[in-house]
Length: 167
Image (tube, rainbow, N blue to C red; front, side, top):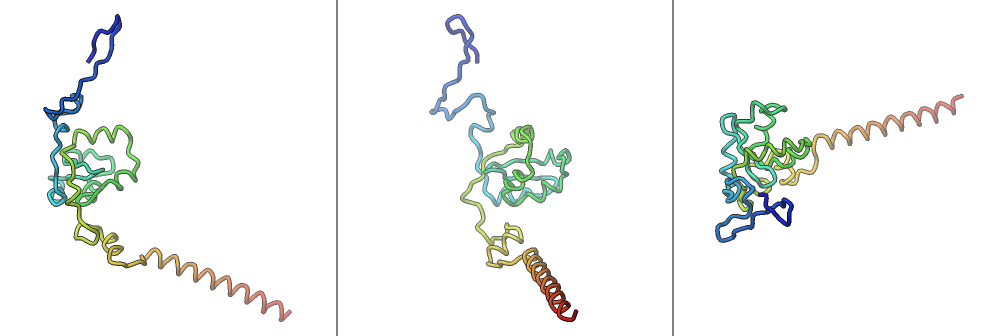
């Protein structure tokens, strides 16, 4: 809003009206009183016809964006039924992509309904870690590579050492 102040135009910010529950008139009406969604409710929206994501504690209905997503719809569908914040941040989305999220916003996540570690909504890797399985196939492979490298190194030294004695 603009106003006249001492011969110049000044910006006037709307004041909050707490008794009306309005904090900022500049925001969309849907964001003034965000609906709280339970995790179980959001997890039900997990297919091409109804896809909701949880990013940074906010719930987004991205169903209409599935066909337009540059990474394809499968990327979004694999991010359902969990907190997709890490998936979203790891990709390094642009500021415009972050702004686009606003039009898909449907409410806030009720954090008290988040599943605990080892529940059915964890990915298999999260469930294994929660159950105390410390080794992964990648870790075992690295260990075997190290042992194999040391074995070859030891064999090379042994051949060099015993080879010199014979000469």
